[in-house]
Structures are given as C-alpha cells and as structure tokens.
Length: 502
Image 1: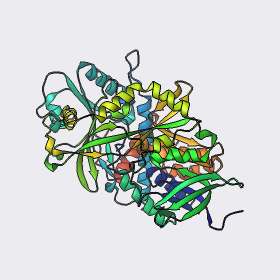
Image 2 (image 1 turned 90 degrees about the vertical axis):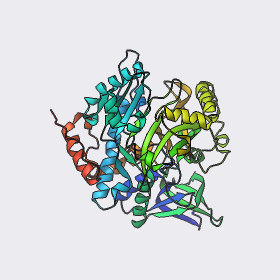
Image 3 (image 1 turned 180 degrees about the vertical axis):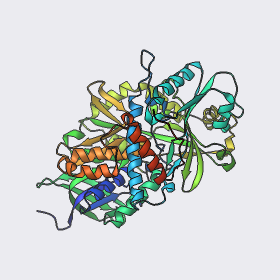
Image 4 (image 1 turned 30 degrees about the vertical axis):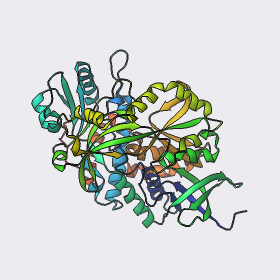
C-alpha cells in the first residue's frame, strides 16, 4: 500500500548535471506526456562536474588528445578510440543543432564556440609520434584538414604565446585542426533544464536522495530529504536515472541491484592555473594538448585551453591532480570510506595493490609547490609570470574500479561507465572523460538498454533529430560534409575550410 505522502511519477532523475539534462531532454522529446521529477542536492543545476570551472571536458572529440591514439608494439597507432569518440561527439552536435533549430535552445554561442585544437610535442621521439598520428587520422573524413608543422615561423602564427622565449634545444612540432570547439557545459545544462521546466518537469533543489529501494509492485521508491526544512518525502517511479557525478556510486550501491556489486570508486581532485591578465589570455586562441609524462595516468595530460565562460574569454592550464576522499567537490571526507562494502572490498584492495604508480603520482602532485607548477606551465609558456596566474580547485572525478575478464580484479577504468539493472528500470552513470562531450550517445545507449520496447517506436524521431544515428560518418564522407556544413551554420560556428571530396 502506497504511503499517503508518496508521490508517483514516470521518471526520476537524480542530479542536476549534463547527463540528467540530456536524458530528460531526449525523453521529453520522445515521450512528451511522461512526467519527470529531478532531485538536486545543491541550490541550482550544473554546480558540480558540469560547471565550466569544474570540468576539463570542453569538446572532447579526439582531435588533439594523443592518449586516444596509443602506439602499438609494432610502432603503428591504434586510432579506433579516437574515431569512436569523434563519432560520438558528432551525435552531440547534431542533437544540439536540432534543439537550436526547433527554438528549444537559444543563443548557441552561449555554450559552444569554435576554437582550434592542437597537439604539441617536444623531442625527436614525440615529433615522430605526432607525424604518425596525423598521417593515420587525416585519411579519415572526421579528421580531414588536420595539419602538422615543425616550422618555427608557422608555429609562431599558430601559438605565439607558447613560442615567445622558447629555447631551440630540441625539435618541436604541433598539429592543428580548425574544427575544434570549446563548450560551456554549465551553460548548456542550465538551458536544457530551463526548457524541461517549461515543459512541465519538476525540479527540486536542495533535495537530497537518502535511499532508493524496490517496491512490491516493481517500482522504485526514492526517499528524499528537503534540506531547507528537513522534511522527508517519498517518490515512486517506473524508471530512475542516477546522474549525480561522483555521487552516483553511493546511490547505486543503495539500490542493491546485482550490477552494483564489485564496483568501487577512486576519487581524484584537480587544480587548474587561470591567467588573470587579459592581455596574456588574448594572445592565445587554441586548445593545446601535450603528452602525459612517462608513468603518469591519462587524466594528467597537460593542456593550455582557451575557454569562454559566462561571456568572458579565459586561459587555463593544467590539470594538476590531487587526492581528496570526497566524491563531490561539495561532498564529505567520509565518501570514499563509506563506499567500501563487503562485496567490493577485495576489488578495492586489488586496485590499491595494482595502482601503486598512480598513488605515488598523486602524492607527488599533492606536494607540488606553486613554483613547481609554474615550471610545468613554462614548458608551455616559457615567459609565464607567477603573479599573472591564480590556482582554482576543479571538480572531483571518481574513476571506476571493477573486476574485468581481461585485466582481473580491481581494474581502474578511465572512461565513462553506464550501469543498468537487468530489467532496465534503473541506470547510473559513473566515471569521467570523455563524459559530457559524448553525453547524447551515452544517453541514447541508456534509453536503448532501458526502454527496448519503446526504442523501436522512437527510432524514426531519433533519426530526425540525429540524422547519422546508426551510421558511421567515417564511412560516409559525403553525409558528414553535408551535415557538418548545416550544423556549423545552425550553431553559429565559424565557417570551416571547404574540403574537396574525392
């Protein structure tokens, strides 16, 4: 029997970030009559990992991230992951352009800007790697137009701030592609939630989900505490999505579904350096990724980013990793210890034994002085002055730890993981990069897993919104060229160079 104070709805979304906003937007478009309730612990949407100051995922499309094209034992490069991530990102762009065209999203320049993406390397070995990377990628339509140079004058045109005062002691090179973007996922998230609210979605701020459990009639009942007045309410739904960033793992564990067992989380905090001199920031217009140092994890890849945040141009460098037991920036110091359960303790211990190198790296990062961070920055900007850069604390990432068939117990995952119940009634998103950039593809995967019977009915609408859904754009260059031209116009991105297709 339902409690008198229990509210029933069709869908419950936990967390006010880009993932909840995306799945909510998709569901409201595909099934507009469904009622959606959103619970967010903080006072507004996009305050944790989706906030522009908290995330580094500003248009991940593998254009410049060299860790997505690993070198094989025979010296060749595996570009599979880079192509996949770029394909996923194209779906995001298509969906956003559909929403703009329909008037659901306004002023696309508030959340997306054209910023060239560059990879920068030093030393003969890495210069050779970058040449191989460009040769491997440029044949693919998604990476067409990528250039590489080791010419000093050309580099001064591309990255003047990075070239000024640079010593000529070893070879350097950079690749560049004009089609890169900078995305303010905080702005995009808020726009999506504003539209959802106009469509009847109920947003509950300062409402913390305390427990999630099954009911006898196979619904999910969520216990929610109102942080304004301390009152507790209960909400039932056929489908629950947990998109609470670092807070997703503890909530998933509360569901007690079999799929939540033997999974742990390892929190990693981060710092960025932000330029406080607008004259310096104006000299750089690019996202420039370097290579992670030997032994450093993929999350540590250094990059110098032009960002557009709240209408203002900014320049960020980092990340510098750190350790905090919190799973959210606004979380508790007991988050990590509270996530250790009898069913995942061996998984966590195995990861601890395996990841001694990561632990050592994090300790080194925590102990870095401001001067040492400046030394790292000067590898990118030789003439950087300490007084012109401030330190900001970025968002928390919780890397997934799980047992895998290939790598055994306690394997640390560096990507985005979706966990769903066998019956599709509940899903949770865990992990980090590429995250927000591929949110549309990831949420479509959630819908396909959780609503298999509805999905066939939805497919025509999905293909109307996202024309390349189910199609490899890499294998259809004409379709990609046509869609890209239309999307760039709708999203008000700078016109790209025309590419002659053979």
